[in-house]
Image (cartoon, rainbow, N blue to C red; front, top):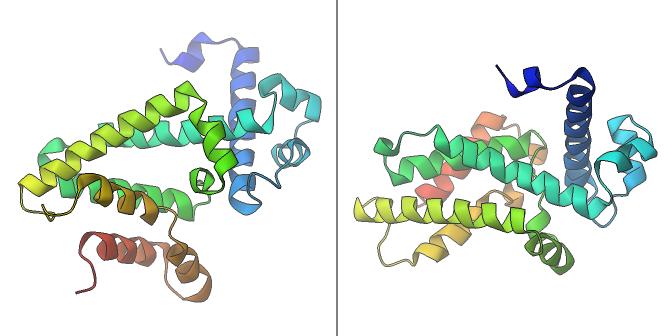
Length: 201
């Protein structure tokens, strides 16, 4: 039996409304940014009253943190579906493609790189930091696996490769290609994936 099947109708409705609130928050964070987003904006975007919103989340800080936790959970769940036998580089490429598609669909706010205040807010969340650490360790293992297989340069530090990898998910080149070219989302994903993993030489 699914989890939703064990919940009362009222609890199911509450959970569904909470997901709608997080969807609305994600949209606003991507379009307005954290500093300009207000709780009024979120309530309006989600189509609920402000008092109803506060039953779910007490502040926009709580909202933004939960959005990022949901995003990290999505990445970790995606990694679970990958076959380790395909190799480190292939797994990294697959996750990068997933992240780029999430971003192109408006589901990837750029919170961690937005401001020092946002970084401080997120690092105070144990739930967020636990997921960041878990994801980073898994990706470290993939980079090391790729190096051992001769798929990535051994002279480059693993952390340097990973930080460059993370940066690709919020690279402004994605916006330029989407807004000022005729490239499809599939084209953009393919080009960004190739530029990071194979370079231009």
